Each structure stands twice: as structure tokens, then as C-alpha cells.
Image 1: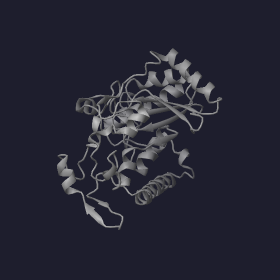
Image 2: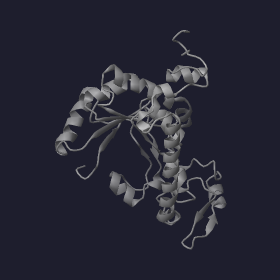
Image 3: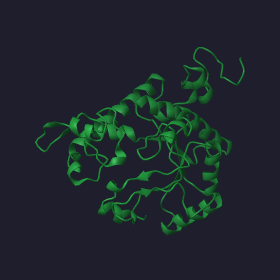
Image 4: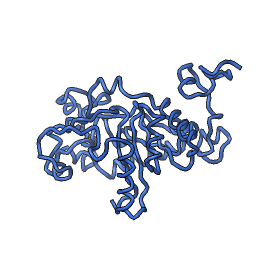
Length: 300
């Protein structure tokens, strides 16, 4: 912990708040088993709770313990899945978090039930507004940082999140795709593209539609612990792709900020936004395009 840049206490994940995942036995190789103190080759349920605490008072104690053992040097993040966001953010602030991470339902996961992925959690847009409202209600906006995640993939997504009040974003699936996730082929040591079509068929899917991370049989070698499949992910190539992705995302973000007349992306604000649908206007609490009307707020 003392070697870390920060400590994140994960209470929930946007695609499966209130529920854990399943780590299949084929992914629990000896190295993973040692890291997680688990028996190798046996299915493991990732618990949906921390037995160290049963409520916000216990979380306060745990955060204090983490600060003591790191000499009060490391920032503490608390990550929650988007459900009762307004109240959860307030509880996390009261518990002493330096940073709140709110993960919306568009966040990816490969280890939970379809009913969770499709029906549990609330959209990232709605969660972001509620989180900002909570911080502003406590007069803690800017004091406690807010990071939003769950479906953030483009520079435009980042611009909208910052304009809504987030301090930063967290990106998951976009990074996986940049590394080559879901690609038609993988690249061998000689730089040749090798088709992964047959490997996709073996796990019952195809490139572009693969959501089989939980199997540990990733055809392009990203979400796997198999020693042979791991070799299909070439770090130097993945790093180049990821660099290109982040550079492009940053260029999109700064271009949008300039278009709004801003010389700093953190100067983006709600007044730069309008909603194109009634639903988006209601969730974001910003006017419907071409009007001054915010659904639920009455008409001016």
C-alpha cells in the first residue's frame, strides 16, 4: 500500500451494483491463486461486500486505518456503482474519501449475470448529475474530486462529463479495444496478422461480438491467464495502439473545448450543453435544444 499512488476502495461496479461476479476455475491458475489466496482451478465468487464493515461508520474507521498505515500520504478513492448515487456520494464524503468514483450501468463486465447487465444500475448520465448535486449540496464540489466512468469512450464523452461537473473520467472498455480486444486477428513475433476466427468459434462467438472474458480463452490474448494465449498480446504493439487512442481522444476533447470558446478543458460548463431528447434533458437537468425548457422544471 505504501508503494501505491492511491488506494481505491471498491464498493460497487456500475454493471453489477449490489452483486459480485464469478471467476471461473480455468482463470484461477497458480499465479492468480497465490495472488488472491485461493485454491487453483476452482470457481470463485467475487463477493459483493466487504466483511470489514457493514455501514458508513465502519467505512470511516477503515479509511482512517488506511491513512494511518500509509502515513496519511495516499489519497483514498471510494468507488460506487450507480444506484442511490446522491446518498452514496454523501456517505462516501462523510466517511472521509478524497475522491469519489461513480460507475454507471454502461460500464463493462464479463463476470456477472445478464439480468444484472441489462436491468441493474442507472445510466451514467443520470448518475453523474446526481453525484454533482450531492457534492454541491454539501458544498464539497472541488474539495472532494469526482471521477465518472461507465461508457466513456470518446473525446466527446469526456467533454460532456467535464461540462456536467466531473473532475476526471475513468476508461475501461475503450482501453481494451485499443489494445486489440475483439480484433479479427492477432500479431505474431514476425509482425504478421494471424486470423483468430477459429478461436472465436471455439468459444461460440466471433470478432466484434465477443463478451467471453470470463472464459479465460481470449483469442487475442488480452483477458486470459493461459500462457500460450497470453503471447498473442504484444506489449509494444498494444502500447502504440493505446497511445494513439489516448492522443486522439485528447485531441477530440480539446477541439470541442476550443469550439466552446474555452482555453482549458476544465473550463467546460453546463451552459455549454443542450439536450437532444426529452429523456436526456430530464436526466442531465439541462435545457432541451432550441428551448429553455428542462423537463420537470416548467416552461419559461
